[in-house]
Length: 279
Image (cartoon, rainbow, N blue to C red; front, side, top):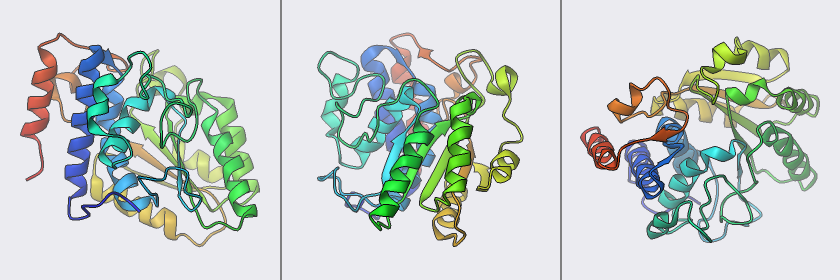
């Protein structure tokens, strides 16, 4: 089950996840911090409300699987795993360094709690389909959660997997799309638009919801609906998020896909997060 301390609010968990991510970014002086800040609320709900897992036994057979399809979001998942007690907080100082268990792109062989190796986009949902089929054959009641990005919806393999998931009636699959409208080449909607996203998933046979991904209560309600749904089909939650959420001077940047800041600005980012910390 999730880490002890269930009296800690989800908003506080999200704040801590953001703080962990900024501290890791400071180690390298750069990174995919904008994504981590944006998706922190979703990860807080996932790890401290929805997922079933054991922090001290990441290979527990009864766990829910959380797949990070977007490998460059690893800094975000590390921050959540630190907060969940899977990784020690002091280890964040090794982020992206030689022999670290926290490389800049997620690799399952390195990091406890990292279910798959990400990187090239478009693979995660297909792997999730295979895992779901395997769990069904084992008669397991575990869920597979797959976090993917709006930019990743431009990959044809994602839609092949979506079609396959519906064909096999994978009601143990919950996909989460972080829709921040940013990718390496600019806005995802301008590069290769996937809109209308929910209509597309529904046309493929999925149950689809779309919420403000920075509204914790809305995200929690969406997770609850997805888990409780009795229809034999996969589910997707599209989460509209703001890149660099919680740090106004980073939110205001036109390009936040890969963030570089001046050395003194990391302290300013932490101060901004502290100002917005839930009371």
